[in-house]
Amino acid sequence: MKTMKGQPKTIDEYIDLMHQAVYEVDELRVIIGDEEDRYAAIIPVVDALDQQLRKMYDDILSGRYQFDPNGPDLPCMALADKLGKHMPFKPLLKIINHTHRFGLHVEE
Image 1: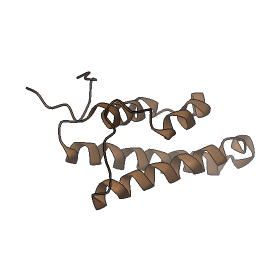
Image 2: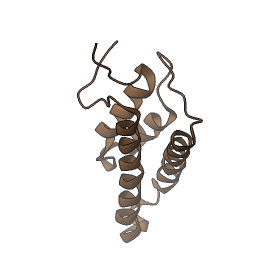
Image 3: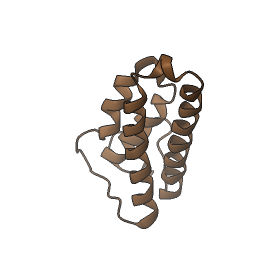
């Protein structure tokens, strides 16, 4: 199994990462809110990212979430790419995506 620096070892650590991602989107909204005209083009992308991350977080908390070993990237990764330089927490999403695709990092 591939591992990644910062990859969670437990579901609780994964939940914490997801919570942090939702928080980061909220913070991005605050920044955008201060200059909506300047960021108008990315607001729909941020809205979609927010919706996807919150659903994933809710699914994890409710037990509906499933890892997808060797599956495709999470849809939020394409959104993160669209945000480019406006996405300071992309490394966090990369860890979440990697864990989604390859599972928790459990030492053997």
